[in-house]
Length: 279
Figure 1 (tube, rainbow, N blue to C red):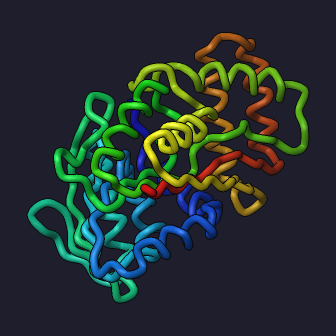
Figure 2 (figure 1 turned 90 degrees about the vertical axis):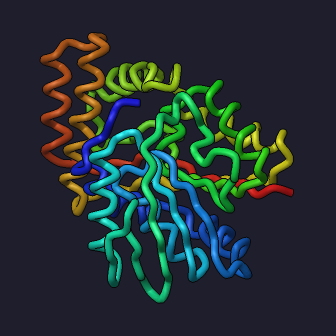
């Protein structure tokens, strides 16, 4: 999978956190309410944003394994979690943190998820989770991944999977063409085979239902306004870069669209969260 910079991941974190479905987080918390401790694998962890959003809803003692292919991001995750925590200390393979009366032991694992979705090996954790990951993987990978989780009967929770294309405001004459070109790029191979894109959550849901899970889905769109100017600018830049790679729109037109998007306006980006619990 192609990497993401820690700067981009940290820039998007506030929008990610406020977009998450509070209802599904409540369902997740309810399921584990009577657990004294919980083991969690976070896949494609990046800078650890998913831990920071999810840990406050889990039991008092938590054992997290953060999985990523990028060693630099795993190091950045430790730094970001340490800064977020009330206190933290380094361990042999990660950190031990305390936050709001929760004990959070964090281990790091560098792994190639494309080759092996079951990063936890033969012993399944209580919870497998990820954020902003599954729109990048293929339909075939999703089938292998769900089979691996179902064998261990782990709970699965994911957030912020791409579900619909961005809606920019005010409208621009090139929006439709830019959207079509961006979506064509989105469906290319990101290291896991042809990306599932906006179909990912539906594919996950069907696979988990076939495996005997109860599945719930909720929308979790980014609502980006004037306070998100830096994020909007970086999002628009990412769109423009992707569209330029497709060569479907003249470069001068792409740059004109990008300049307009960076100058002003708002944006809604569709995402979806999902929780799957074995019956």
